[in-house]
Image (cartoon, rainbow, N blue to C red; front, side, top):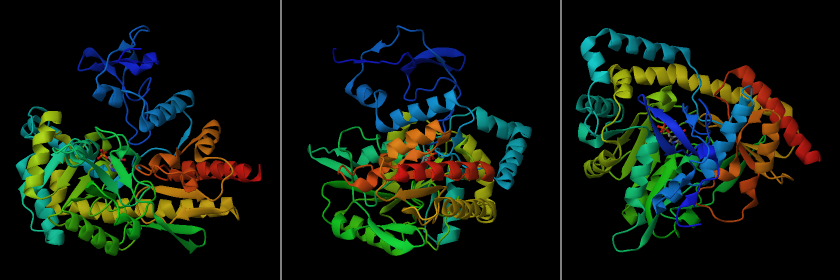
Length: 472
Ligand SMILES: Cc1ncc(COP(=O)(O)O)c(C=O)c1O
């Protein structure tokens, strides 16, 4: 084979309709229809290209990004499982739950916009400035200042087309090959971390990570902590990054851990990136005491997705002005402009503070209740098996650790798929941790965002399959 790659699946080179035309794109996810994929449950509509159109020559970039990778393989598998069995109990994705009060608020706002020709034109008919509408950025800055007195202006805020795409730009700004030829990594102080970071780097060995300390809390609960004794020795780091609450575990790093990470980042003159997709101050899916963290060495990433707007693709970065300028320049090359829908739907909520009341009165209680129910159901079903559940402190997942499981988490995932339940096998989340720690193969991530009945049925099947694995 020459330097191009041979794409084995005809579906991988697919005909993807865009605005009435049709263009050929090598697609990461082997989705055959409108399907849901693993992390954000992307829905793509396209039809497969005719067979025989599957030999393409790709650059090094193309080979890395259009070829096989961990997350792409997993998404392929999850989406084909959904195609094969549309009744699958889907506990694998990052889709937010449906919270009626929140859906109503956004529906009402959209109707108001559509009824007003000027607002409607602003929504559909204009390219937004690359950094995002100044008035919206002022509203976000004003909201954060009223809550936390962070002294922000509109110049500390930029908008992106979802936080995932912001991470692509941001991480590659700080890590990879440096101008002097040296190499830097994005360091994850607390593995396991968000699977979506895994393949984002333009160069190899892009992530490094520190193995966590494990605290057993009794009653089948445990909690990961940052192991600062090992973190201190990590070298050649371009930035530290944590998700808070953490996807996949539902861990919320303590205020002390955040202060310590901040001190380390400052001492090394690198930024601390905090991914607040589930966190503070919105959507506020946090069940424990935690203070939102920001200062001029912190890059805070927020998103409207887990508020209930993953389809609007709106991410918000809050950082020092020079970092925002650098990000915006890079993001302009990638995206040209950011989308108008998210800012249009959410802007009034920032001014009125309703974004907080929706989070506190509707979103957080929805997930808190669901997490407590799901833990109770697992306790009832798993009985005295050697299982541990990460203390659910936030986000929309439970992280289960089956100690000394006789099969791997990948095998458990496959067996559950056969039984009609989709979870995400845990080994995929140990981004940057290239060791042979058995723990990596003993965990699964389970979303509890769906309706209670679905989650309960899923828990029953998971528990049954785990019991079979232990008892042979
Ligand atoms: C921790 C975390 N960060 C970032 C994202 C990306 O979110 P979005 O691109 O929808 O803003 C997700 C999505 O599931 C996530 O779980």
